[in-house]
Image 1 (cartoon, rainbow, N blue to C red):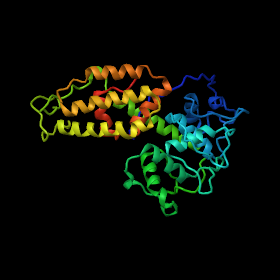
Image 2: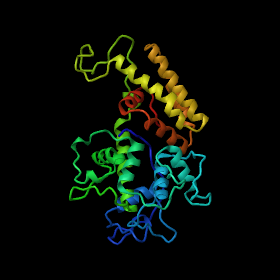
Image 3: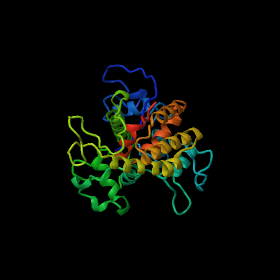
Image 4: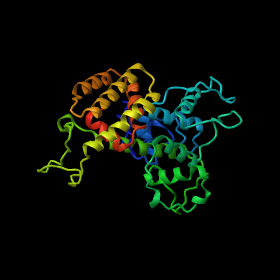
Amino acid sequence: MNRKRVLGLAVAFVMTATSGAYAAGFKDVKDSNWASESINRMSEKGYAGGFPDGTFRPGANISRAEFAAIINKINGFTEQEQTGFRDLSSSHWAYAEIRAAVKAGYAGGFPDGTFKPNLPVTREQAAAILNNIYKFENSAQSVTIKDLSKVSPWAADSVLRVVASGAMGGYEDGTFSPKKPVTRAECIVILDRIVQNQEKSEAEAEIKPETQPAVPPAGTVPSSGGGGGGSSSGGSGQPSEQQVKESLSLVSQRLDGVVKNDLTTDLQKNTADRISDSVSKYIADSSYSISGDVEDAKSAISQMSSDEYKAFKNAITSNIPAKDLETLNKYFELKK
């Protein structure tokens, strides 16, 4: 999975070191609970909350509205679809979250014009939604699910991908139980795994300025640094200049197309334009120096608010394939 973010909100909780401590201050979730670590992390980051009575209700089923609210917070989905559902009034607590979920494209209503915000989310529905957002790699050939025949056809591929990714798992008997509702605890554990994987991927993929590779000059192929000249068949493991250009060409197309459609502010859009324009110039002439463009892009990014930057980075990482994103990050360090 290629999605990358810089995550974290500073929320202080007073925790004791005894076995009777309660996760994130919720009076119905002890530290000994199987999901307590995930509930702690997700609560501290501001992605999951409890109820006015101080409970988290880990065993309760997660509703469509609750699921949308958590996913929106994680991904920075805030733009709302200007549409309505006949069972959803503007006074509903999740009115804005549901409209944002519809706008993001991972949730929709029913043929009768309703959204059914309180309807529990099943495991196969959760898998389909998560795969729709995170686009897990197709490594499902190693997955065996005994009750795969019970999975709805529209969700089968998503279930295989999500299980193969490790975000969701089956049960000890080898089944997935696709129609079973997802509990609030299960939902938080699943999403916590995804967030942690994103953070790990980001940490591993970040390229420090002092080790950032130079843009290869025209007509040359980057070598592995082991001495001697490199070639496209020399086994260096490094991409050729043509491969770099092909990768960056896709990046430019994505930036101008789907990425910009997900951006909402002028600063975000102008920054994407600046990056795309620079990439296009390098594709046309690989002797073109992008150093000034990189500094301009970094300067623009530094002016973004935390939410604005998170949404900007999410739009890029969710719409550009991992290998092409890695190429882009060699030339533009997209972090604050």
